[in-house]
Each structure stands twice: as C-alpha cells, then as structure tokens.
Length: 184
Image (tube, rainbow, N blue to C red; front, top):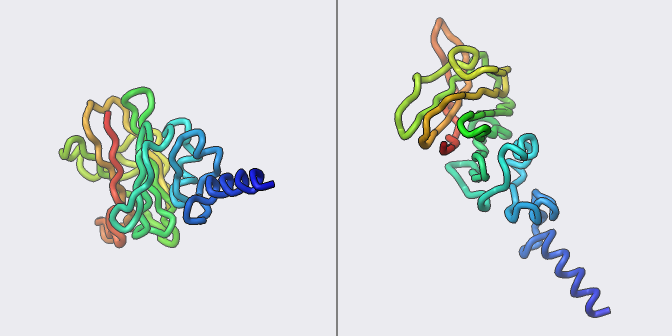
C-alpha cells in the first residue's frame, strides 16, 4: 500500500509539477520533447508541431510577453497587440521561412506591415501583406501568414503590425509585435 501511494505521488508530481500547478502541456508531450510549452503558445505549436519540432528549452519572459525556441523556429506571445497575439517563425526545406501571426482580437486591421531583417539589415523595408511579401499570403483582419524562399544564411528578425489606412497613409495604433528570430 505504501509503495502504491508513493507511485501515485510521483505521478502527480510529474503531471502537476513540483509546485502543484497544472501544466499547459500534457505529460505525453513532456516525455516526447523534454520541455513544456506554455498555454499561450500551445495552439500555434500544435498547428505546426512537425515543422517547429520540439522546444529546445523552457519559455522565458520576453518584453511584456513570452518567448520560446524550438528545433526549427521560435514562438512569441505579444499581448500588446491583442490578448491572444502570437507570432511565430519556422524554417522548412533548409531556407524557406514561414511567418504567422494572430489573433489580434479585439483589434481588427485593414492592412498588415511585415518587417524582416537579416543580420540587423532591413530587407525591402516594411512590406505590406498582400503587397511584396512571400507567396501565398493570407492577411485577414486579425491574423496572417507569409513565407519567403531563397533567403541567404544569417540571423533573421521578423515583426508585424496591424494598421488602418487614413488618407493614403498607415495608422498603426498598437505598434509592432515582439520580434521572433530564426537562423538559416
């Protein structure tokens, strides 16, 4: 009986953690990858889990949000642009970089500006989603997805901001998201 109680106690510690807090990730995912993925990042990771791979470490505080590295990319929670705003970048086939963002609720935008830098140098300035960004593009009012092909090796930094058009210019009330980084 004593041994059975010890086994149950160990099992609960593994699921609940040492402080008793319920993990955002199930025990099977911990076993598969070795690191947990916080609730704010879990949905994006689950959508593209095969592309991201496993977390390379635990998530950390990043600005007013959270950041986590994965085998093939990174995910950040950027709550200043909406309570559920998550930005992410991952690489496939060596040099294709996918960048996704959303959900910006309660904010809705007519246009999105995407900025990508390689080794600190701007690449083509702020690109309008639907304009000169990767293809295919999906940029509805609260989220978006773009990708780039043929990028050269380097450290990339990617951000996005939602904007409204006013008299031919952009009005971007919430500013840029927290950046995500990816190396090629």
